Image (spheres, rainbow, N blue to C red):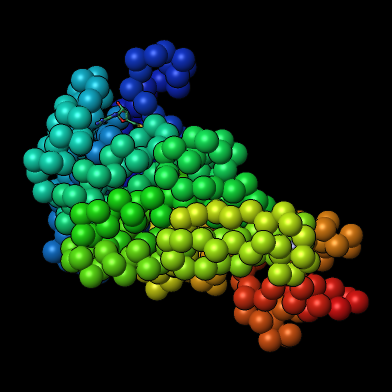
Length: 370
Ligand SMILES: C[S@@+](CC[C@H](N)C(=O)[O-])C[C@H]1O[C@@H](n2cnc3c(N)ncnc32)[C@H](O)[C@@H]1O
Ligand SMILES: [Zn+2]
């Protein structure tokens, strides 16, 4: 079956063959992820014009690598599966594009060749590929993680094992998952004296995606580690606070309600998960030939406007807690702003928001009886 994505035409396995064990993988639902990848690579080239080589580390049909090659990247498409590599070759040829292919374990390839950009898009967790990527790549590491249940704390022990961190299943679990992933990636990079700056990160129910710019000095790695710490969350009143540092000092009781059901998550990434100006550029590089252009533009606009805070709130969850009726989000955010607090929507959900106000301050500012 042929499909068109962006500027290229790609042969992909028939959808009916999904149940066939050895079919080359293709997921049409990841089109948004791929469109945003193309836009991010364009924005990144504006930022770092010397970056030219792109490794599609787990290529499957090769759709990412082919789209990057069509945009002028020197693309290498790697997969362990010989059928996938054969399909990658056909898809490059179908679009008259040059590009290398490699039937290799990408961890081995990364230790032999130097690339400016690597795209890690595995089944489940990316952690088995993180060491080779951070030890060897020059500029940018793009990562998808589809194991959201371990990341968010829904599969607690699996999360602890894979990410060497304690996740917590709070009402902002999507953000916890993103920050647990960033923490594990940042700590891995630091082992190679590499610092990371998240340029753009987004989360859906199905996956987390992040783009990390690398800096190759020990001092950069030290600065990265300073962005790591812990979040303390009260299950009784939803108060939360954070502290930087690798050692956690959880309060014995909640400072807001004095309850004793305080959960601690970490080590977790507390720094910015995206760079706002860069995300605006990503949105500018979304083009009308992309099937998800509208969604991609909306998502980048929302993320670019998000306040830089380590957790977010959900108005509906708070209102349930307080036994009051929720109001429209615009009104709700206006009330917070009128009371002097910064407030923004987030991409984690339609009723979610970020603010520096505490739960008690939000209640006072946003409730009619406040
Ligand atoms: C989720 S799919 C990739 C999807 C593809 N990037 C896309 O956008 O459609 C994961 C691929 O990784 C390949 N793979 C698994 N382990 C690998 C390894 N160690 N090195 C290279 N490829 C690997 C699998 O054969 C599979 O084709
Ligand atoms: Zn409390």
